[in-house]
Length: 342
Ligand code: KG4
Ligand code: ZN
Image 1: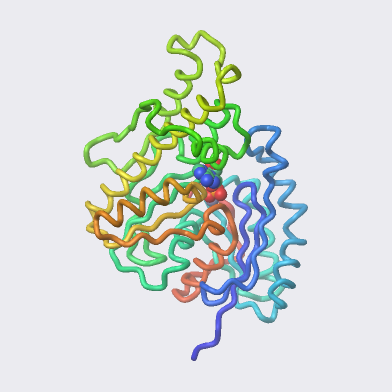
Image 2: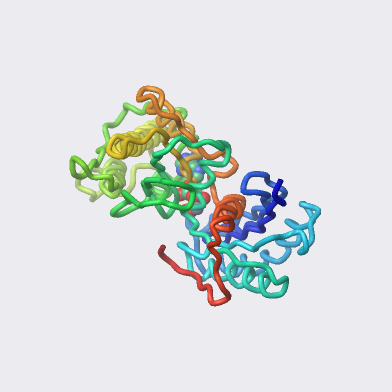
């Protein structure tokens, strides 16, 4: 039996400072996530400089906690992995500098990971055998991507949003409805009390074969709904009953999910996929998980979905993907830089 591979993963791409140690890509030895939601709530969104400063303060205590939680020291580690793209450069740089420092001081190989590909990896976390070909839907605050997957490290981007990401649309509509930040969980909670058929919001499908997404028209339709068609009135949200707000939330959520499910089906049909993977922060949404499960049940496919604990940003997904890169000999060097886009 080959020696187990222990990888320390680091994640600082947006507003979570996270570190984790994962053995052989699938056994979590420790995982620490420090959310900055409380710091950004009063601004209604992530402020890059605030995020960066919080990452700087938190990264080394979190790394110490991650090692002690795993009962491990530097000698037990086989590599240091970091998400270096895509994300906020001022946030990513904190993780990249920490990872490069540790790789140099502890004389370990360095592995660079794409944050969105790491989300995809978390969709494979509970499933050792994936029947290929597979398509993956990754829905987060910054991305809405469809991939064709030949393996964990062989991914082809086949669709993406041309404007807002799905999570971004959830966050912006939550702001319009005066629901608390972060918007996704707030909309989901409000939607549970509402009727998804109350308002028929638009479902933008783009061209007949298109695998791209557009959510800006939907967001504008919600804006018109709360301000009136002429857009001259102030927002009526303050005067709406909680039932009316719940109906808007449920109808908006249904429109997003209909589009995500229809495009995923289109991609799976076009690529002859046997398996559908689902990951990213928005994949925590129960209605989306159910819609993709129904899609797979009715079309004879298998759904592999990230466990809820690994949907939003974390470092387990970074260390887990890094294992496959370690096996494939894909290492970075100390010139590694953070990059805003992939
Ligand atoms: O993957 P993630 O943690 O960070 C990025 O890489 O962007 O995703 C965060 C996004 C936010 O837009 C958040 O509102 C959304 O995921 N989100 C949800 C839910 N939980 C988080 N959206 C819908 N329903 C949820 N339950
Ligand atoms: Zn993310």
